[in-house]
Length: 117
Image (tube, rainbow, N blue to C red; front, side, top):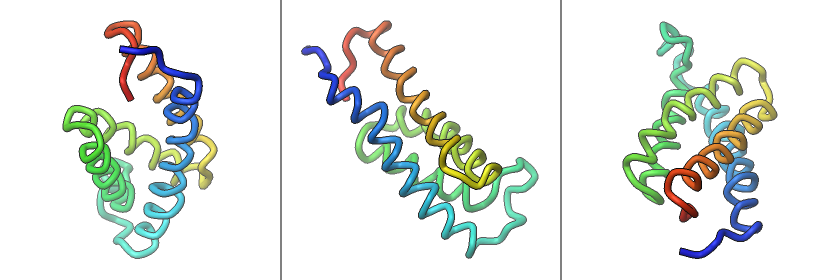
């Protein structure tokens, strides 16, 4: 296995979360929130739009990674969506997403050596 370059790390830790948050929260969840019922999922304080977006977010990670990754990102996606709806900005979910990707990269490098992206 080879060392990850600063470019690879920057893409994984910063660029990917920016693109994902713009697409999934800024566009998809926002549009779904406008057209889907508002009362669904409210028992858990999670909008139906957030739930649907998080399922799609997880499925895309499954397509490009694996089922374990998809299961791991689902609760994180619910958190990102909840932060987006609660604060009406992408800033906080984006910051948390960047932190999550950084911690994932750091943890996998400690426990498994240099991670593969």
